[in-house]
Length: 192
Image (cartoon, rainbow, N blue to C red; front, top):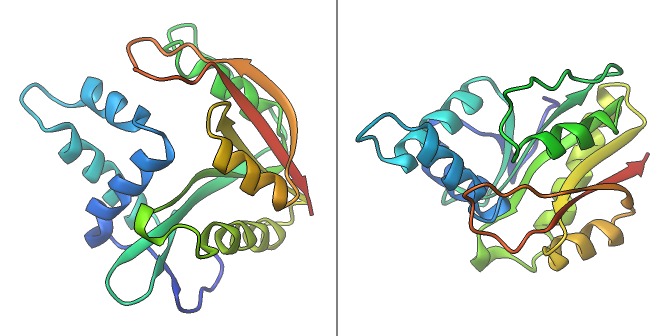
């Protein structure tokens, strides 16, 4: 992670509850669906999700916007290398198109999660976090950023287009048991 200045900071494990909220906002409920299936018998799916986010925070993988009262927005991402990721035969159908699309964006910094609490939307945090993603990509020696967005997320798609992202590929969504209106995943790439 590059050096961050206020109001940006690296997330810490104590941010786990907010991070789980943000991840679930970004995924329109898909994370909670996944956590429900992954949680141990009797374990609260939110507890499982918070534990996952706490681990990612310990690993320094998440940047947040904190204006003084805890995270209000966050960014998680990583480098997609030059070689495609092998897709295991037993990978659930929900994830297959997402991996296929990531494989179509080699040598990019992938914006995995970009989210803001609803009360803080419309204040430019998404644009500023996308700018941070570009700074991270450049620091990693990459010439582009990438992301995947649901076809029914018109607000996010419009934000990404305003920021210079271009739709380059898409795959049908296989929702399994996830209740969603999403019919396709769209890969968007921005050259830096």
